[in-house]
Image (cartoon, rainbow, N blue to C red):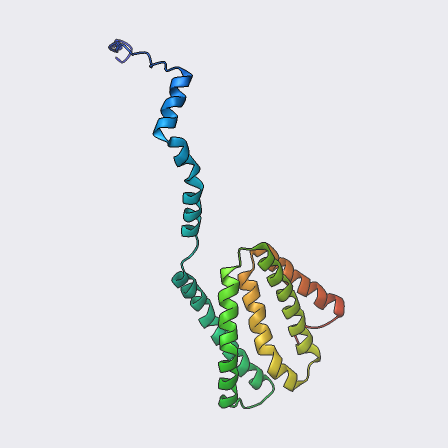
Length: 193
């Protein structure tokens, strides 16, 4: 059936030839309209659009707060657990004092590392800090006395977790592998029987 149908003829519409304007006349029109001056001012508009791409301050504070709250609770948990690990009754006044002195520093660190974590320089510094914090934490657990561990392990563990969170996947994995290789090379233990 479809083969028997004839295709409908398209009506022929006469097309007009585009107007040919000489080049010198084109340049005169361009100069009179001032379109070149408008094009020169375009980079300024592009810079303002780049500023729109950045997070506003309120959003940066919100993101930093959503990271800070769990990390502050993690720091508190580490303070409590390290006391119980060494069979020490945690003195809540001391823990509150350490949290009051450590929380503002942690909040500032979270805010600025979150603000600049896209920078290669910041990623490198976070990678070095993650490597150093991991090695120091495992060294303290293996060789530190109980008082040194109670004082230093909770903040170092919190910094280590924060740096791993802020790092991109590749640097985070290489940092963890670096800490693992150092533990293996130095003969330290992560798990105790």
